[in-house]
Image 1 (cartoon, rainbow, N blue to C red):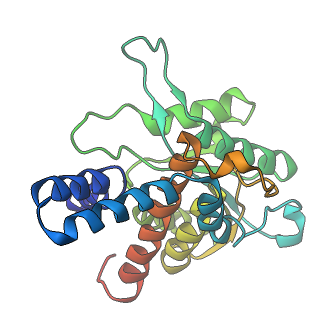
Image 2 (cartoon, rainbow, N blue to C red):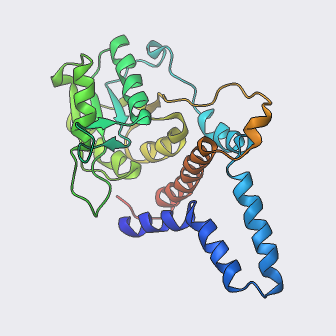
Length: 258
């Protein structure tokens, strides 16, 4: 099911839908509805690559949980849980393993919270792609925290999970073993609604501590209406989160996932 879900995401999320729609137009060009489908596809591509649409899609996700500026106001808590993101393994022309900007900001927020109130940090997330060997993704993230000054004994690994829902299940096992209940949950702001949905259902008492905010104050800049790569990437992430929320809502309320 996990592999099937990965394939379905590739089918649903851009750019593959545009290719399939254009292929349908090419095959059925002589049909009366093909030209309307072409116009619809063109309009969708323009809309889903523009800044204002991206802002409208992303704002409800990032504004759901505010940043945790003063952790003392939510004490007591026993640990800090940070969810992993994309890693860049060594290989090819890349001399050593590193993390992408989204993962950097997540770890940066966990580090900030640790410096204010030192608590054990659980780095949650393992290898995702079932068709490639493990690249020690979890270890790469933990190494950054240790490099920044977090004592090695305070950095714990949860490297079995492949998605956020599995992270909640696996983190709960660690919490139960150590008799911990309340904890700060650190991930990207856009990813926090889906994460809280999973963790509230599976892992005791999470306290949202989002980082990696991306939305600045909206300005009516005419250039933002033009399709661009940055907007397309942001819209892709937002759509991925909305689909994930729907999927997790189903898993929490209607499935038998453990």
